[in-house]
Amino acid sequence: GGVKFDGAVYTTVHGPQPTTEGEALYTAGDAGWEVRKGDKPVDMKTVWKGYKFEDGHVVFMYDLKAGDAVINVEEQPEVTAIEGDKVTLERAFHAHGIPNGMTVRLNFGEPKKDYVEKVQVAGSPDAAISDGHGESMNAIQLLNDKTVGLIMHIRIPDAGHAKKEGA
Image 1: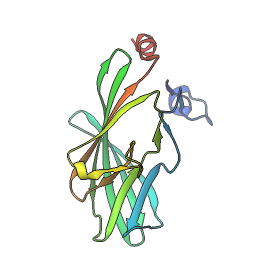
Image 2: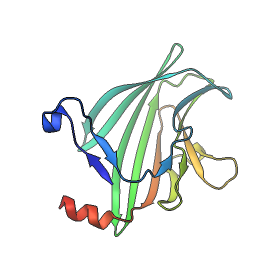
Image 3: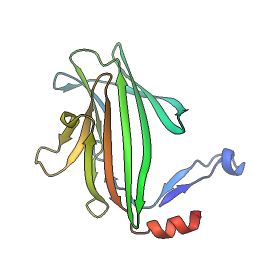
Image 4: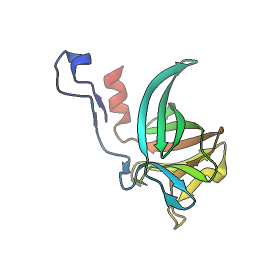
């Protein structure tokens, strides 16, 4: 796995873009942002606002535009542990501007059982949304002005190999 850094910024060649390599950890399914009014999905658009650094950490910024509402979302992803072939990925989300009566959720598809060992929510247990069968969590609901953490324990079969190449 990893990222193939290609394109003008990396190789001065115009046209190609960076691409990911390796197995997907989740099946795409209904993955992505979703805004609901009551129990009905609302037409929306996700707008990438860039990134910033805070205290040495990267923070991704998005706007979710749903009708007249503009919901600001910030995400701080971080690999917090690497032990053998196990990696812990934490993603902290903070949303601002969710109107009353609307909810925001991030659907992340169905985890591939061979790779994703456990998924947890930190900071707000009521933010976890299961697939309805109680088998796995496949979405989180963001709360206005509160940080919701998503912790993924992942097994990467070739993690030791990738680490050696990058050393």
